[in-house]
Image (tube, rainbow over the protein chains, first blue to last red):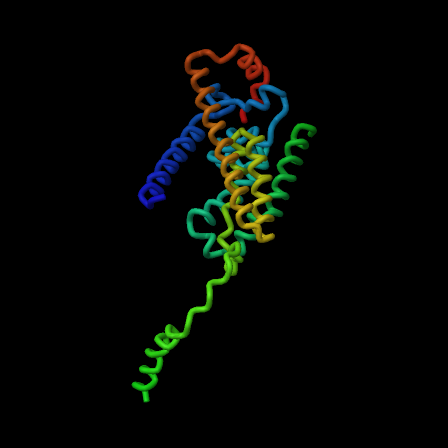
Length: 127
Length: 131
């Protein structure tokens, strides 16, 4: 992939991301029907591990961390992990800190994440 | 002194060239003295996909991510590369499905064609039905 194409894709993704965050900032997904509802929840009536992410993003953008944790604690706690992944992959972190890459993104982190996601999925529907 | 040393160094490769070449060894699969770079295991991307709504596809991506690393560290590099491609595929399927669902939803709402039963569910459970 050429360098120009990479920059173009990066720019397009950044613009879309900022636009999406702006929408999530000005509109409350709880009150607006325009925000899509979870298909799993509509069909089964149970919440999936991603349910509440939109409302959590809205709350986080308004710096209401408590409400965000209530809507989707897993998503809020996963954000630093996702940012770490983005840094390691796209901003040269992989070369600078190969140890961190190996520790946080190896086989066992995948297994642990899988277990945490499934546990969160079950518990959030039971409690 | 220095000049002599230099000339010796310069003639050294020539001498090496004159020795007869050993016969090429029989073709074997590459032994990987230096292992290839670890393929991207798409772990954090599949977490994002899981949170983006398409949870089943995202979870498939996480399972493949775990396999990529265990295969790579057991020295099965080609296999790891192949599974990494699958992790990528499932993660992209998840993101694609999420985008299609969002477009589909927005079209239904804007054209006023949102099925009535969905509207009822949403109204009755105002707080619980956003993903």
